[in-house]
Structures are given as structure tokens and as C-alpha cells.
Figure 1 (cartoon, helix red, strand yellow):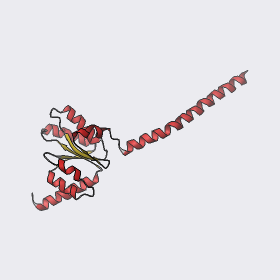
Figure 2 (cartoon, rainbow, N blue to C red):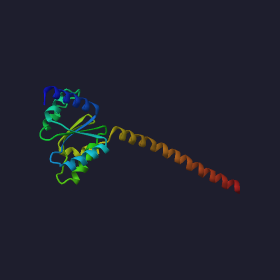
Figure 3 (tube, one colour):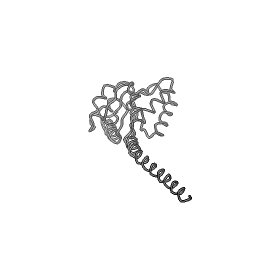
Length: 173
């Protein structure tokens, strides 16, 4: 590959990485064409961008990024694929479910950058699956805030029915 071509690939990678807030590095080496195609289809359904990259080009794109990805440089060895997503836990769930059904137990999580934190190693997969996105957290907070209001409203409504029932009984007598 010519130096000009490499610089174009690096700048495209840099803009792609900058467009997504969550980044996963996974090893999908050893998957056959059918398995890789199936993985790509599942990524597409989950709005996950899957890119197979050369480690040196990815490293240069990360070095040129505004975020300091230096903690991820040690895992840039062997086969590396880049999974980018708007939702923090979507790639982790996909990796876990796909590798569970795959005899090679691939893809394997190498590292991730999710919610402005770094996760290194396959052992972090369960932790990444349980991370909630900002929208999920906002939904939980709204549900918690609505709960007391709903209790008060239902108590007032049931109390009104009780008082109405008592008054109706007194009026009938």
C-alpha cells in the first residue's frame, strides 16, 4: 500500500472513530466466510459498525484522535476488528451471544472504550453487558420520580371513591 493510500485510510478511520462514542476491539480471526457474514448481518441489525483494520493504521488513527487511546495500544496485536456503536452495551451483548453459539468462541473482546472509560480484556465482557446507556438511565430516573406521584394520585382517587360511597350511603338513608 502506498503512503498516500495509508494516509487516506488513517484519516477515514479517524473520522469514523470520532463519529461514534463507543469503541470495541475484538478478535474475529478464524471465522469462516459464512460466520463472518452472519456476524456482519447481526451487527447491521444492532446498528453496530464492524470494520476489520490493520493494527498499525488503527493505532495511527487513534494517536491522531482528540481522545487519548494509549491504554488500548497494548491489545493491538493479532487479528483486530473495530466495533463502533451509539449504544454502549450493544456490541458487548452481540459479542457474548455470538461467541456463545460459535464453536470457536469468537469474537473475543480485546478491549473497549465505553462511556469515557477503558475496559481491557475478555473478563470485562459481563461488566460491559450490564452497563446502561444514558437514555436507559434517564428512563429509570423518570420512572423513579413518577412512582411517588402515581401513588399519591391513586390514593387520592381511591379516597375520593370511598368518601363518595359514604356520602351516597348517608344520602340513601
